[in-house]
Length: 464
Image (cartoon, rainbow, N blue to C red; front, side, top):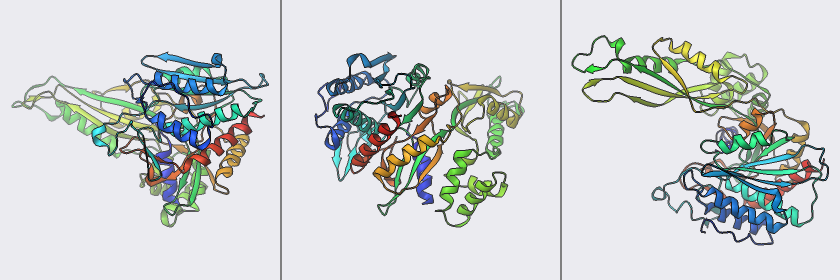
């Protein structure tokens, strides 16, 4: 679930058979990384397809060929999917390890809707097309290539490096929960599924977003029941489950959560205000200076790209109700999707929704098992290492911390106390971002810089 989309799109507005085990070309580098990305796309690692284990086995073979000890490569089956970890022991075992987080699974894709088959990678006009080409197999391929190249070159890390690839980030995140518990003693997490660089339509790099926080994802069901009966005998409208539900939806739609801020959102708005003309830029500057500025918050909240940066949002997303055209409804329900500001408890949002709906007959239920986490601190050592790595790729580009409105594996690592940072190495145009959509693609021009960036980042952080 790539976190790049909303936050980085906002910044730009401000500014082939599965199961094979043959190894990647031994030279690695750019050609090896491209070959690995193409091969990775060919694995249909969609929930229920049972291909995550096959993909993990392929990647394991690459690490063995590069000289990693088989005992340091582990695949843990979890349901029909699983998690892959590769440990590169450092020379100083007293230092906490660095974890690299990415995910092997992808969202579903219906071939009949695509211009090209989603799981038969195509390199065309400077792009690699295919499901997962961007989310998240680009950074998986860049990280794997970088680690293997560093190993072959004889690099010896001082601090242990652990690659942790989850297998169901796009769905249940069961593998993520397991990895977070097993690796909760880590120094920090570098997540390739968040952050990243933006290139303008003029071809010039605009900004690099360092993701250091994300909002909590939670779904609530609000349901009403009634005795039902024949539609020719409706009775009082307040006894109709659909009518009562309609009133509840109206109240939720009219309510707006209070403005909030943290170090990430303030830094983000300060940086983007400098590149945003007009009232929107003025509102960014005003809110960054005074998060209690109600007028500035209102201007930002009126823009769908920025409302998620200053408030918790809850919005109705699905409806169900009734059982026959000629019968009074016995049940009606709505699901409300909330993106909760870091640090706010899910239970507090549920309590607020109950207060807003203000109907004793409303039955509330939290769907699934959502988790929440606070934003990670903007550590000077991480900021310096990321700046060095990004500037080795794109000299001088601004580094802007941000908070994503979506959820990534970092959510669970932050939840167990491990600071996590989205550091995707792809630079691309916002107009090229088709993650989760049709005809997903990634520019091949991003590969050389991505390899430089990952090598610099890993070398810097694992050497001290």
